[in-house]
Figure 1 (cartoon, rainbow, N blue to C red):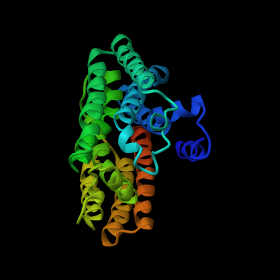
Figure 2: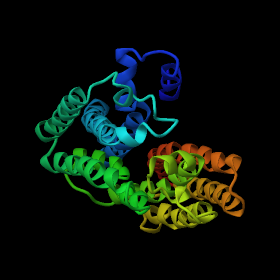
Figure 3: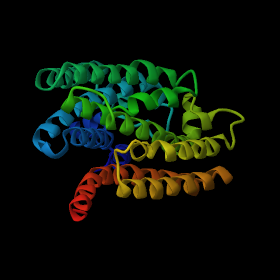
Length: 308
């Protein structure tokens, strides 16, 4: 059952224990964090990749991601209560007590950070802890005061592939920064579309998301277009530096153009259908580009053998 289905079910009946904690831990977001970290770990490991070990690192990173989700909802339970789509979250309804959420969030974070430090390296543990603190202690409260929260939140949001890379290599270099930069730029059209779709909810809760502010009509679409255009050269950095081949370039261009076209249409006229189109393309873009990033070295290796 998806989180949306769980929340819908909760509108007519009490969430079960498992459902309540599932909502708190945001499994879909955790899965995305784990996937991005796994890509970073695979890229860092190259041909000698140990999939089990990479998966272990991603599990620890995912635990800290769950902790971030729990603490985020703990700090936002008052604003969640004023939003239609979040009013049935378990901390709002009292299905989960705040004290229990604090203990669970702390335990998840401690297990994840300790696992990275003991099983991998101290740098990955410290970076993962810093990512969680930036998300919980900076981004989450900033949503109440400034629309800059999206830009600030994009920094911890872009960290998962870099964390996976560092866990496996012990350093942040090359592809770690490419993957970080791509995910950083990708987030803006994605989250601007979401914020536009739920702008009335955000306004009701008093959260300073750009589309929810007075006299900002058209700004979400224009900024989505701006960032989708910026994503094109950012996504081509690996090729420009000689670290990617034609398959990656073709994928980055095709996916980037699709994202730009969807954002341009949204910028021309902000409608629910066009906002959803941006959201849909964004959800295709990231897993497709990351998957082809992993395939590109294999294709280049096959091409090199064929030219001998």
